[in-house]
Image (cartoon, rainbow, N blue to C red; front, top):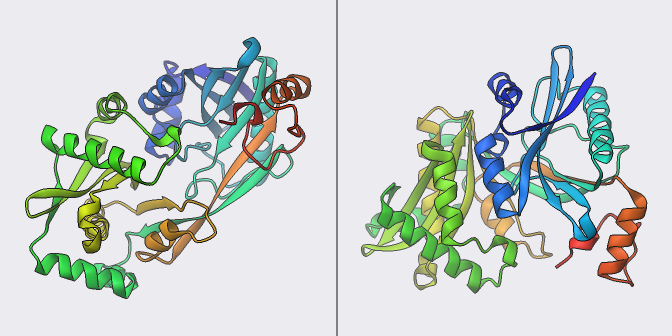
Length: 340
């Protein structure tokens, strides 16, 4: 078993993606963008064992005091490769990854698993946290079956939107992207979202450049005005519902329901296998998850992995950040020394 830490310029990264089911989160262009946004550098751990491969995209960041750590780029990257259905190989590969990252002087490792592509996670390394379900639409079903699976109140409001003449479609114009930015940023302010999710115009422009034709913007207009908009990213048979925003003036029409319904048909017509709507907000009364589950009964668990690679450095950084913190607890915000 061979393990190495590679850069996004290493051709081996692209070779793995050519041979394995993956998502846009695994693309070098996306990881490079995430690294810029998170003030780090794009790297991946590559493990090779005969025909089996394990590629784990990472953003390597500077930590306080001159240390470094590694984290998954925003979203659901997790490992990709061949042979990842074998628990023994996945576990061994993660142990190899931890060893090489520790040897590189990194304090901690944080991994977000892909709900669809990572059914196997290591159970004997660090702490695996479960964050509830994410919702996926199975595009192999007929359009009639997908409509029947849609919750009744969703169907009622979608039909109402159609009767009222609201328009929806994929729109790649500059005006549409400007409208999306405005809607997204206003939505984040309205829900008092953490700063991590408050992306600026430059981020969206860079995302568009990095993903090219993989990224599509869908827009609902009511009375000619943008009411809801969402970014959808298509890669290797998976369409990710990435980010969206709505105009609260049109909230009574629930335009995001029309948006999601339209993009389900769009993704299916293009021959994709899955439309992943993502997870909820993990609150006791999770309205976001309830909304998403109105389109599909198919759920996959979203999990993360937290590994302390250097105990003493992790303890020191955590206590410097908060003297009352418990450095041995891995089930809360991780790494603890980066808690906002």
